[in-house]
Image 1 (cartoon, rainbow, N blue to C red):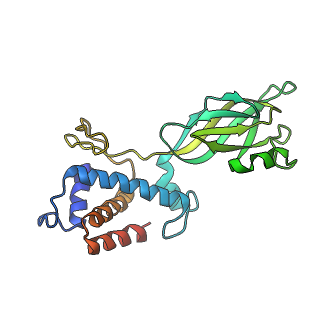
Image 2 (spheres, one colour):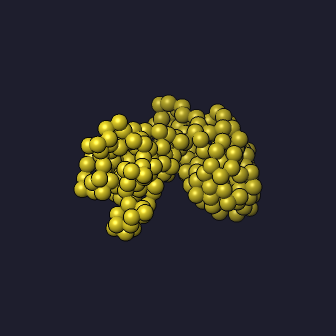
Image 3 (spheres, helix red, strand yellow):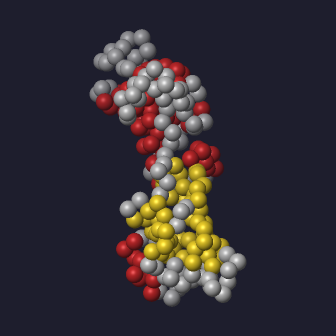
Length: 233
């Protein structure tokens, strides 16, 4: 969908296309509300706090809507005592999975490892639990998230020779040529359209209208936009 269409649709949802009541909305305000709205919408879909209580990949609709954000990336591993560490990608938004291969001095062919996500507070317990501790024999281990890094535990029993993460990245912010970027205060020199499908963009337009309506205390429009955004999920 064209950004110019998004601007028109947001103003129409707010009944401001001609009247310009309450406030004269500028393009940068609509851009900021749209970008904020898509982040909030993505969070609700991934964790399942939407009206259908469906998290990511729990229905075909969730898969269709969010697949554009799923991103694979190789990890650069750094060896530490008991675990390997890797910095999160700069556009990281939410965790999906880590794939890795491991070797030992007796097996150098590279064994695929199943990696479960665990809580950092439980690491000491997991490391001494015979059924849950890192095991090259069973091809299983666990990872945690600490200070913007992944920690993949080996208990120093095997060596990781590669790792790849699959994650949800931050949604791309829309930009309009000649409009000041509300995040950098720099006038945009490129036009960046929404990366989502048009049916999702329609929901995001309602999200943006809801945010702006709340900012200008237009309660009726806020309630209508909020209801439309949720019922069409």
